[in-house]
Image (tube, rainbow, N blue to C red; front, top):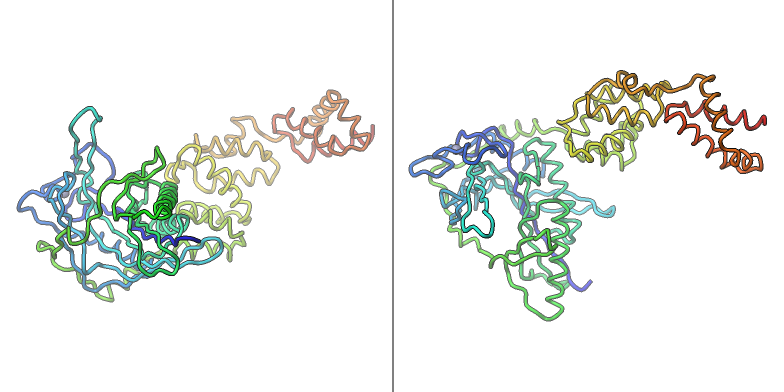
Amino acid sequence: MKYETVIGLEVHVELLTDTKMFCGCKNEFGGDANTRCCPVCLGFPGALPTLNENAVEFAVKAGLATNCRIAEYSEMARKNYFYPDLPKAFQISQHNLPLCSNGYVDIEVGGITNRIGISRIHIEEDAGKLIHADEADDYSLVDYNRAGVPLIEIVSEPDIHTPEEGRQYMEKLRKILEYLEVSDCRMQEGSLRCDANISLRSPGESKLGAKVEIKNMNSMKALEKALAYEEARQAEVLDKDGKLIQETRRWDEMSGTTISMRGKEHAQDYRYFPEPDLVPIAIDAKRIRNIKSGIPELPYEREKRFIREFGLPAYDSIVLTSSKAIADFYEKCLIEYDNPKAVSNWVMGDFLRIMNDRGLSIKDIIFPPSYLIKLLRLIDSSAISGTAAKQIFEAMFESGKKPEVLVKELGLEQISDEADILELVRKVIKDNPKSVKDYKEGNNKAMDFIIGQAMKASKGRGNPKVISETIKSILDNM
Ligand SMILES: [Zn+2]
């Protein structure tokens, strides 16, 4: 390896509080521009902020779940900079005394566990959103609905060494935060965002190389691609004996490259000082214990429990616990049905596929977990075939109707009646003399073909067992 890659991530997470960080405005995504603003979040002179207690609790939860030390005393600080989406011309954040520090999360890449340090988690407010008009027009619009939305910033140590590790770390954080229910973690809506610092150095070198910050990565895939691109770009510059400069670059999804934006600012450029309009935050040990007791089972623990309790393969367990909502749905199914692997196959397979195809989230599912179990019981009792079950399952996503109702509506009852099947099979045998001859000459595969034709003729409704038995007995007696 010619160079060692050193990556640190700064992850911004919008918190799911009812109201904004320092005022009573509703904290919600979207809506008509500038309809959720007040003098406080618009930075009117004389308007005073009040700290949102829930936001602090959510941040403490995130800190505890990532093994951080929680500060019993921390304070808010002003970060001064001018930008049109920041109406006060400063952001209220934290600087020297953050709420959480010295944590870590473990990630697994290629069977090896890596511990990624978290240097700090601090709380701050989000900025508004600029909406740029077409290039031909020379103006931009600004929407302050997002101004003042509570954020946490999770800053990792530079412990990440490959683009894949970067994505794994980010996915791990997303899972944890989603389980804690402190954020909806929708990267496409910006409630989970990430900036990366990346530099290269010769192996064994202790000093970091020139650090490049990458912004604007809107998905896990984009993060991994941007890091890989930047890693290669920096190696190429160094190979040519070129010098890298400390700068901020933007990921451009269309071209698949990073583009220079500006030289990097330093902390002193922000002229931080303690926020004079807010008192420091004091949280005692008892309060921290209380918050800790409200932390649910975390994804890693649940993953291990699914393997232990339900005897699932590790792969199933990882997929099922990748989201709390999916894991909850799965466990609810098991209340009434004692075959964890069969349910896992359906949830990991058709359930997730249909949700993906239709862009659904679990909130959009209009039938209860018990309906999936009703469907499995219909298969078990041979009332429907596996093929028909898939069709019925699709229909459940649309109508939310009970599977037994859909069986009737769609005419998918399994044909097990021997007389019906005999008639069907006789016709298939008559229509396929070549395969019959092949079978008689010892080609057993020809039988599979005939069974397939019979299933097809029954439109997937024939009972496969009865069909194959019938075919075998006719052919063997010919
Ligand atoms: Zn407000």
